[in-house]
Image (cartoon, rainbow over all chains, first blue to last red; front, side, top):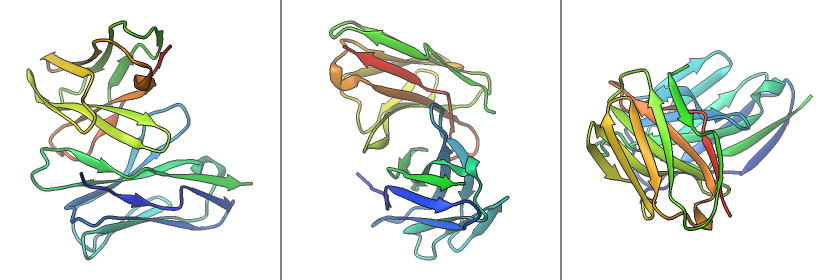
Length: 112
Length: 112
């Protein structure tokens, strides 16, 4: 099946720093989404992208749909302690009957 | 927050026993999904439903069955639980914007 690659598995940053993470695939997706999961909870949708090249912001979060449609990027600016969690990317393909393919996630730690 | 509940939230069961997990939504969304989350594997789709009585398999469906007799409820059954099915199970829903899936709080299942 399709795979989305997220690396590294873990990231450690200082409070106030910006952080970028990306998600890559060998296949084309026509939708990219980013989710965040807090410990003990379900993933929460952060941003959804529907058009190649699209850049969308949600507060301190900015995500981009790559021009090749094979990648997406998430940037978090001025990190705060509550940004800690696991960040997942997900891709949707035409004809996939609403199914998403998920990356394995990046665990973000923020040092105060 | 999307109106999704999962029950039970925690369960410990013995190998060989049947287990049913319930997902209930109040959003009247068409699509419902069951995922499992394991360390190193991210979120993997077990089964999904695209309408009442309409279901299909995901990538890790062996050992699981589902039923959806009404819009609001999607049941996941482990006919004979095995230790490899110890996991955290998430239900998700999506509506007219089909790729935007919203997750429930999860059920932690331990099979001893």
